[in-house]
Length: 383
Figure 1 (tube, rainbow, N blue to C red):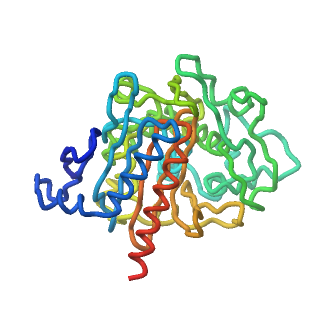
Figure 2 (cartoon, rainbow, N blue to C red):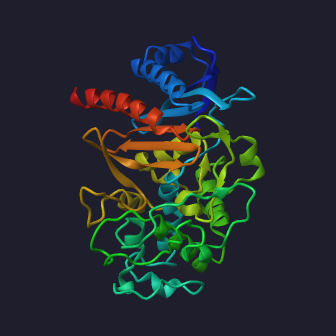
Figure 3 (tube, rainbow, N blue to C red):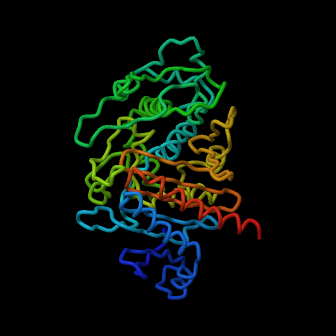
């Protein structure tokens, strides 16, 4: 059962939220959050950095021992209407989409629809990787999900909401990229780590080929619904739009939401509570919470590094190993125009922080918050 949420206001005119583990309106629980120096420090950092960097709002969740302990929602989902950020506010999370979509892709391996180390060429009929000087048969699901398949296209910019999306095949041919860059081999598969959003677009096509379903429909039915991620979607549905924050550019001006053919790579919309619950599932290793979406051993496999890796990058299957401030965490960051997000996890302590912003300068908000969280994490580890 998901934890109940208690709303309260303290010291500032923005909504703050307390996660009560008991589900009661306990003043003792509230006082514990008020006395949490990390909570107070992060609140102050968030207030200053959002104001100084044209970022209207931020939603934050902190996880300790594998459970959400508190959230903060600061600023505005929409500046014009003064609509506040809440735990139900929807954000686009950019490349964090990859970490979530990997759960759907790995489910295909559990169902026997795809073999992790088999050539993906055998699964493709709608589109094929173009002939190359490199060995196409070495492009596997494991290598695609770990950015070691040698594929091109680092990332995608999307299109303004309201425009017609091109097909996956057109995207793979480069028609959604301004520079016309198609998905093709640029190095020998398995020889190096090289980030490729294009690989995830290819994986999206493979899922559709093998299941005969639209990617977004498959993910909603087979991943989001059983995991209780009720406010998460790869499409801008009516319900998602109703709760969405407004996106703001680097100067703080509102812009239209971005939509993506390449949903698996960059198109996920979610809330801070849904994404924090996803982090809980990645940390808890409790099979019953996975609701038959994935086996425990599969999640653990996804969180292990895949060779080769280097100082250029290191990945599991969907999950990235990140090294900020000289400290390695697991998770992902995400940047799209008008949005910025980060999810950091430390597996040994089962601690995590999730930070979602509705502004292009959001990295200037989440990075100082991350440093504050890391400082606390290191002090706990030293005890």
